[in-house]
Length: 375
Image 1 (tube, rainbow, N blue to C red):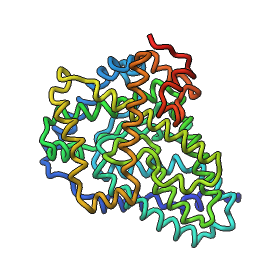
Image 2 (image 1 turned 60 degrees about the horizontal axis):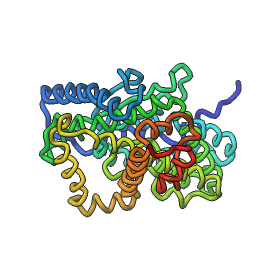
Image 3 (image 1 turned 90 degrees about the vertical axis):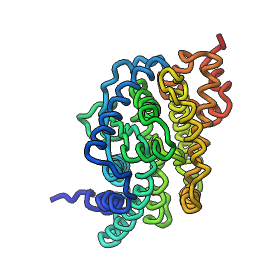
Image 4 (image 1 turned 120 degrees about the horizontal axis):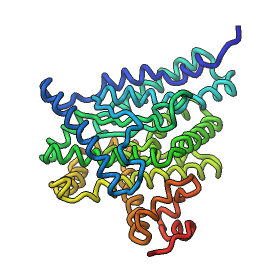
């Protein structure tokens, strides 16, 4: 019987261990009764539903009209961690398969199993930390590897205990805060619906980047651990202070092609996050009555983090997220100001229209390349 590479691939990262570790290490959420939990779930589902109409009005994207292309799930911290471990496994599986074949002599079963256990535990610890920070996440990669699933079959995850925890900490109106969060996350969902080619494009870029990193690794397990630790940020997550750009990953790149792919992913993620921030801040008091208060208190919250929390964020490179939000938002606002939302929406037409990292910082270059004139 022919032997497949699946066992070695699975052993490289113990994904089940990652999920179970995250569930055990994740901090306890706010104390809620069964009735309160049911009310929060219903409220978040309603906010997710209502926000689609506002995203459609603000963006002008027809993909947002009565959007029904993917799941909306209200989850707890352990479920979020498990969902992300599954998506990571699907996203990295092609690279793992190739690695298992090309590095078969280096992947002796005992070594691979030990390395997979260590890497799985490390990844689980990181997921545990993030599981208490993530408010929501649109995961476009949920169906990667499923040939029967349409490209748009992603899932929107709303992490209920974290939303409740932050709204209580900020002392803001729960209904307003939940709608505000959903506006950002539904915008990500609309982005991938408006550009159905975007998911496969990002999967290809991430696969080539991760494959290049591991293929060039001097120490296979160490490089794999670094990849698992840093690659997650390229997945479009709404996390307080967590980078969509893999922090420290540039130091692992060894050739110009890898650096170019990383620069491209950085630009794409800046675009996606900046656009979502522009949309969530475009609503006025008629939609979210306390939006100004929410934004002010949410932004100020980062200044009151504990020394330990700040240290962990620095070690993991998590402060880069806020820069990416602001860089992308400046790009979107600059383009919309000059050529309107319709002109900006050309960015979703095809992958060639995506801005480069240089264009993110100099929007005029993108508008010139797109032959857009100010109206």
